[in-house]
Image (cartoon, rainbow over all chains, first blue to last red; front, side, top):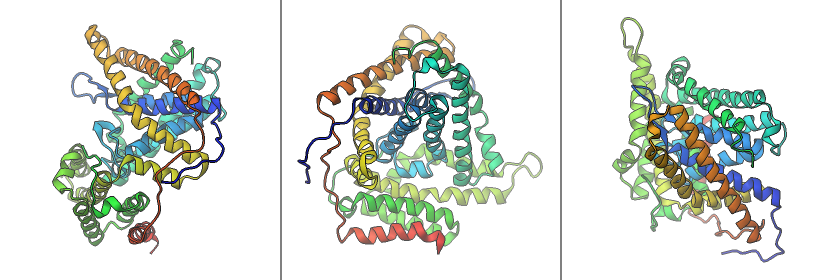
Length: 194
Length: 234
């Protein structure tokens, strides 16, 4: 086993702070992927997975938010059962049940949301960001998720693009509700100390 | 659930970078060549990978049963028409052909999961992505693997606490808000503690990793992965 004995180059405090938050947001995204809230009737369960992407973008900005979602996907590729229903593996991301595009979309969405909300590589204080900018950032993230996820679903399942979009249409209102909840959490001051 | 099991099969001894490349290559190849001969060839390759990993196809079907159940619906959805004849066979067959491509990819992926430890994948990522980004990805993967069960336990605790206090009488949106706020709070507290712990332990850019080196047996696998990846250009 190779080891390095050269002089130690410490990681900077700011980098450690953003990095540990990215690690924990990745773990939270994985945990929320396993939990859903049942809805009445024949409605699909209320998945909590998109909150990982929302808070990666909101709390961490484009670079570190992207890292958080990249870590989430890589850990799943490595075999840890972090995807919905405890699935794992590169095959699940690439083809799976056709929803791999949404996983990749979460990564791109976190980068887009972070870029719009923070307008810089490093995250800024969320209390200085208007509600409108937060909503635009998260809405853009959702657009990116569907723009990647729906054609990917169509390619894997062989469904025509319009039909694949129709299959995913019922999930859109729920994602908009989740967007509202995420912004309400920020505006409610629950993240004020962060 | 498919997990890594230590062993001494040929696949266990292969370099993880070659195995990852074969998975990418196979996915690209079957999408680029949607023909029956390619599908048969890919399925045979998948079955060979499973045999080399000492893994039964039934085990894979059981592990990915939700995936296969969802995919089985796709041809039906593709064939349904909103007017006479109500069901069209050609689009359903197109979808069935597309869905069939998933099987060999999941076979090869399952063989990878069974024969490659998370630590090896982490080392592969860290070797493939150069410099500090690769190091952050590698260390980050190790930390997420370690912390995921704790965070999952936190989220489940919060969910159970909400339930114990009659939270199920609240609207789903209110439950989601409370669950996310409390889970986020615990997660960020863990992040603060992890940051302090890393700084206290002189978190540095000098990692110690398992050595990875391509050996003779890895080159045929690398060649196969490259050939599959580049097959759309041939």
